[in-house]
Length: 157
Image (cartoon, rainbow, N blue to C red; front, side, top):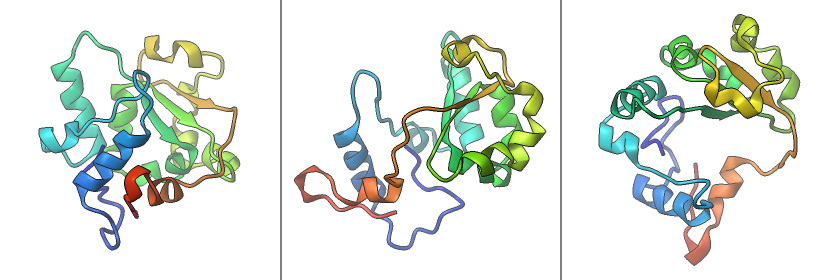
């Protein structure tokens, strides 16, 4: 979990610890584990976090998960091309974003690296490799998911 997305305003955002507790409350162990690794590493950008994780855990294989809405603007991220060079990326379809994501600057620039039939084996692919994951779509926005959590915790952002 990131302490602060550099592309988002902090206005109205709950403190990091509250967001971390809320994320942990909805995680589904053992499949999803919420971590404060970016805060502990002191990294600000995804690419720096991934580089640190790869160095710290060289025996492990990582796949970066992102929503289709992020693929549309990932080209604005710090050293975004390096992110795709470090680990395979799975882009999860989001309602209303499918076509814009697949036509985005990043998708176009990395079209030769797209793996259309290798999603189940994406972790074994050498980067750059990415896959677009079609399937069940949930119209709930991440903002709405963060609004109400068990114990009355309200989280905005």
